[in-house]
Amino acid sequence: MARYFKIAISILLFTAGLTGCKKDAPVDDDGLLITSRQECFVSNLELLGSDFVTVRSKAAVIDTTAQTVNVEVLFGTDLKNIYPQFSLATDCKLDPKIIGKVDFSDLAKPKIYTVVSGNRKIRKPYTIFITVQR
Amino acid sequence: MQLKQSKYISLLAGLLLFTIACKKEDYAIPGANSALSNDCIKRTLGPNIIGQNIEFAYAMAIPPEKGKLVSAQVEASIAGARGTFLEHNSYFTKPNGQDTGVVVGQPSTTDGTKTTVTFNRDTSAATLRYYYFIPEEARGKPVSFTFTAKSSDGATVTYKMGPYMVSKMDMVRNLTVKNNDTSYISIADMMIYTRANVAANAARIDLIYLYRSTPATFLHALVSPAADAQYLPNVTLPAGVNRSTKIRKVFNLQDYNLARLQFGIYVDDLDFQKLNLADAPNFAINMKGEAGAWIETADGRYRAYIYINSANENGSAVISMKRYDMQTK
Figure (tube, each protein chain N blue to C red):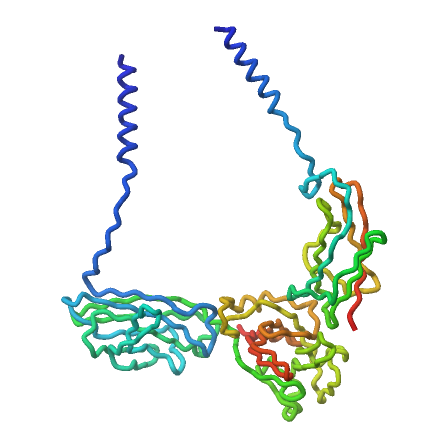
């Protein structure tokens, strides 16, 4: 009887050993999954006005080498109240985070957003240059 | 042996419980009420605005063998404005959805807060519509209603509705603005002034309606007189027209009261109270039909929502406005 009991306990412990300690997937400070991806770039930038309608006059020009985004906005755009929407490479995140409207009115001081790769090891700052349509 | 017996008993009891516990009850059609009874619904939605009406449908019935309806009465806590009435038609809905009225009594009479219809037909069941036109006295106050029906057997039933808060805001609809002419907008007066009469009201002008076909992104615009000159192209302002009004464009806010379209969206007092236009510009160009704009006057007294009912290529537009006086207690 004791022998059967020992065998049962051994099987149970063996199974627990196999399944019990699964290593959690790594996450960053924001609770986002850290992956092995190294891609790190901006693929698109949309700018919405206070009415949530685009204020771009044409598509944003993104230079991934110079790490710049050039975008022209419509004449009369309220640059103090812009909602930017970045499209990034897979698993990337943006620093600083965009949590609402952004003041882009100081055109002499273009804003800089840093793209962080999926593996969180590569950081590329992108400068956003805005011009107003004439 | 005793243990075995108790096990069987427990099993049997459990089985019995399982069998009888969840019996599905069959639906039974409720029996007709044996006495005079009534019911009421409020048919209008959204804020209760001065000058508009609140509509109710009041239903009352008595078994024919008990008697017939004699009268229906509504008492409002604040007397309704001119036009308040209780319909003397009872409505039923045809299969095609059309509401059809049948005359059941004399036209209603209103005495102060009470509006009454006296039945003059043998009627044992009726649904009457009540239209309460909101008076100025009710601004910012709660208003409630007591519906009463009487039958020939001496019975009386009542049904209370409300209280409903009456909005503090004002509303004006379908103001036509035209480029270079009828284009001076006063939020304080809720009026449009023409070039001819603007001089006398210069200090009350908050916005100017403009239409410019070039640049292509200008088109229909609401610009405050103090805006940068590039937003007032070829505009010579009359003396004294110099206010800087804050304005923020809005899209997809087709307020039902202003637009009267299919959208069930309402701008209410709370929206104006919470509105923050601290960093808003003093111009809005390239406005579209069915779009709108939040407004705050230079002195901060008035906040408004201007809705563009239609924007026409000939340089005119039809606008409607809800306005909230921040000083109203």
